[in-house]
Length: 245
Image (cartoon, rainbow, N blue to C red; front, side, top):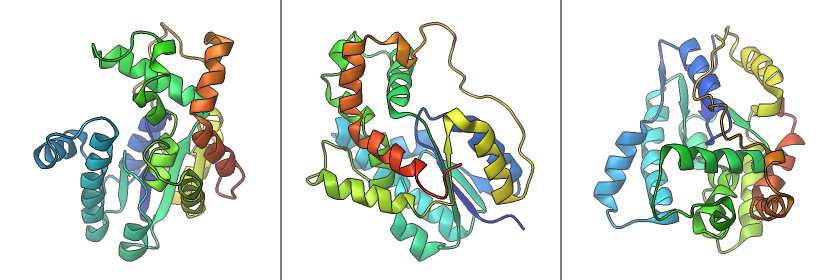
């Protein structure tokens, strides 16, 4: 029997296709956490929340939604949801943990390009150079910190402690993929669940306006690396773990 699975899907890490494939492999007992539903609940509970607080409040809602799925024993949960050790250990400590990461600078650029393309906002800076001075850039530079420690680099009172928490939580994972090594990740995932996985691509980025590292001027790249320092540290730590594929 395939093990119960929690697939933590960090944004813009290429996890949509894998998450969908693994949910299909568990077609008789699988679930995600609907973004529209959690947003509606957060808007009802915290109508004035904005910026980082809005994200953190919505993740509080999503934690409860995750807890309900774990408590029900849903075999596979794949979602944009933070890792919560308290839920995992109290409700289903034997559930296997999987995530897929990528180079944090590439992830940052992909995230920026995505919101510029699909969520235009007159209040968002028009250029990448201006965006790097924004509060949102601080969020995009610490997505892994958020997903594995529950905080951003600019919303924590102790960044070192938050980084340590994220590192400790990553050691709980059974499989950590790298978008630059999808073959190894797929093989590891198939081995972990003992079931075949279909191959498909979802949310593939259009060819125009590439967001590759080499397309960014050197001075901006250095600033992005500085902003992404927490996630770069966590990515390097993840690559050192036995669970890294």
